[in-house]
Figure (spheres, rainbow, N blue to C red):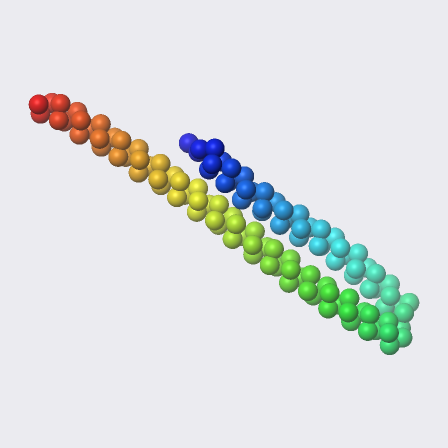
Length: 114
């Protein structure tokens, strides 16, 4: 059974993961719009300044890929941390329950042994 602090901790992990997912989604949408604009500019704007601008857009799109990859890695790390935290809590609960059962058994034995 989780405590309010543990539930809050889990919610914080899930909220952070959701924010990163939303950020990646927004970046992907922006990336699509920029790619479309770059394609249009590539057709309509063929001067050296247009080519330089196209290269700048390509560089930006590559940097966005790196940011999206980093967000994905952060999501994975948070998910791993959430699982580990849940497992640790489960292990601690199990240990406490086991100790309580042992104490009850010892008390019963001591009572019977007199």
